Image (tube, rainbow, N blue to C red; front, side, top):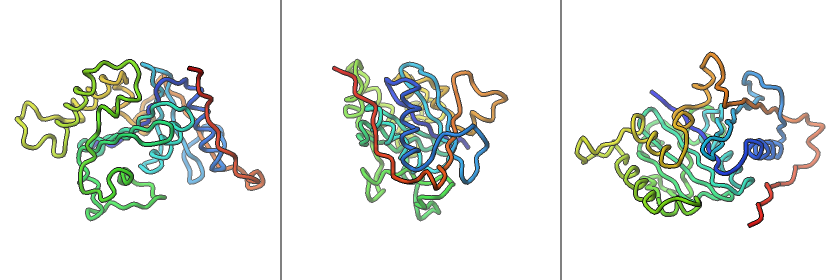
Length: 253
């Protein structure tokens, strides 16, 4: 079964993303260190180069809440559309789209996968796969987060008017249970067809949306478009004052 997730930031440089990560971790009393194996004290990520206007971030952790916070923080720092997406056990596709630090759209193809009664929990500091935190839009977790293509594309410049309709078709076909009630030819497998089509629609490289940190690091050599980065806690003597929030300056319009 495939389970992975990734973060994608549009219209910024790799350096902007590194600066956003440095800001996020420094405010939590972490600093960049030499790349090393993960420990209880080390936080590892991987950052891509720019492809199709997107920079991708892969978090080593298997804690959905942690990735949610990183995506939110990167969108606040860069003022750029930031998309966090993933696939759970080949079946459940989800995304959250952030802009300026706020979530503006979300989708979950099958929220029953993340059913607390089936053994999943909301431990914020857990290290296992946890439910995606859709509480802002779906407080009772009793309905699918349906996605709103017009809102989704409202933060993307230069898209054509047909793209929201194409996205809506994907989201509808990929609803819970792979389109239960549809004709077989209309059903959608997110693993085989849906996620690659979603990526193509947004100009994202499918190679970067259909994988995760662990799968990338399993390769004999790291892809040339990817670089690792590690963070460790600051020494207690350096934790004098909580660093202030900072943001990437907006470009003049």
